[in-house]
Length: 530
Image (cartoon, rainbow, N blue to C red; front, top):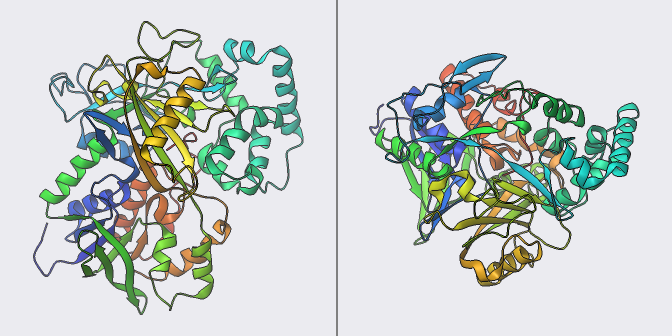
């Protein structure tokens, strides 16, 4: 691709999955040279891998599966699937099967770093000091844990919701009750969801549920439980199963940031540019086009004005609108100011071992889960990852247990304002409270704060189309990804928004509807996560 001074320039705000995908696609398919401006000192956004004393953290947990063929092929081009995987491992999508291309002489994870692992998925709920399948399944364990009387109440409540659904469906509470019944909603959904968002479910728009638990219900959970009696489909994509029930996935050897560092390296080799440590604080725009991007180098406060033929923004749309000046319509400014985000703290704790769970630990020093949803009222932690079970290569010493405790908060609130040492002490104490780990087995810890991790479906969210109408009027500006679109996209959705934007540029189309249509189809969704 051409990289001379006469090349057209695309300024890309943010080096997360959407921004890096856009840059790579431009270099592969056009003569446009991408320049990425990233505020942090690393790439990957919330899909990055954080390294601490030889141990690696996956911030939020990222399973690499998609019902998009394009995304699956893209990932495997970056990191081929490990050798030695059973020939029965196949990709299933659109009611078709396709064997994952695995070279018998391909990468061995023990010898090569450029490799995707095939991993088993296990997520459970921890409620009332007992484990439940996640998503909830009507199996023997669930019946024993809840008791027959409560199961009957749940069944009757579900039947009532199916016969007399809440109409109109105005809130997330309505959404959950219509799909699971009030009894199951109160048992497993209400408290955890309110811990995540910090507001009552009745204050959250139902669109969040449509984004995060699309198509999943008690009926489908029961159907999946019945199917599991028979020989298991080991498909990676498993299109006929609702995504929340998928139980095999691909995973980079060193976590999600491993893949995005590979992408960043390829971008730079192809002539693209990635500038880290730059905070974008404004756009220059007139006559229906953006002409330049303003940024500040955070190392020395030097100002940068970068002219652009195209602009791809993955930064929080709230901040984008605020940086576009006084000519932005007042109504659009008001919507931007009213958008709300939920922030996130990850505490990494290293232990010699975990306290054995009631079912035992299978002869290991830890439980078998990738992560556990904590629905206990006496602790603040919302979810716990066991990084050993994502990839053994995330842990320096395989005889230790490397945990990630996830806390949901608001930037500047009491939890966010605790020092790192105070947060580590909180995590250690809460692991003892729920009897996951004993303090005398603790070895080391670290803290990662992530601002604006979750775009909220309350505040002025219902007026978001006003921002879209304004930004879409700027012909060379594309809003992409999770925060760029203020939509709870997974990383594959974010990638697809970038791919679609480049498709439009290649086609010479100014209609941005296909970008906004990503992650609105009935065909795809994943569980509440990341």
